Amino acid sequence: MSHPASNPHYGLSPSPWIVRFAPLVASGARVLDLAAGHGRHAVYFAARGAKVLAVDRDAAALATFAATPGIETQVADLESGTWPLAGERFDAIVVIHYLHRPLFAPLLAALAEDGVLLYETFATGNEAYGKPSNPDFLLAPGELLERVRESLTVVAFEQGRVAGESPAVLQRLAAVGPARRWPPELPG
Image (cartoon, rainbow, N blue to C red; front, side, top):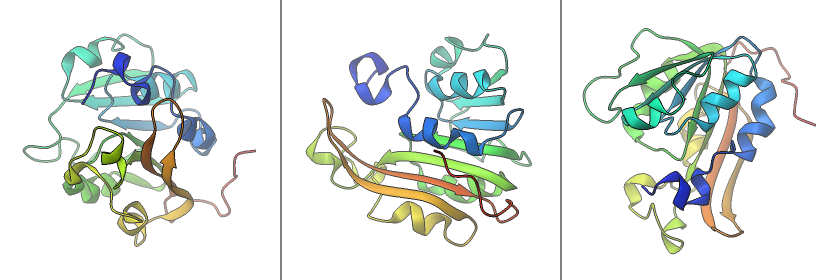
């Protein structure tokens, strides 16, 4: 993957999708930022009063924000060995620009019964615009919906081409656990 400074999809500002659905996550919530990279979402949620665990295999990237109040970091290679967060539960899980399909089951198991999953990553068709282009790292049409259909209630989902300076094909999902008070508040 390219370095954040060289790719607008990896900027320092949080994803607009995350900002839009962040109100679903209560202040004081325990948030997992999976594959946190340089921490733009960890920092964003910590500033909103969350207790964030930022996990990534890149210790140097985690070090750039490790001293931020409200953030704990953990270096872990999520693609080898066992799930490093066995037995942990989170009020919210945030995954941006990362896909490793074997993690879906443990990830969903780590979400509290009334928790929030915010997910945004690349999808089939992105290969026309650059990386990632490997099908292993691109969601099939509707795949995020299928992955959560049995366990979560989808609040919002979109998929398609994002235009602009750096076009990409993405899927985005905001979903809540079955114990979540219904209906959830939608962002204004």
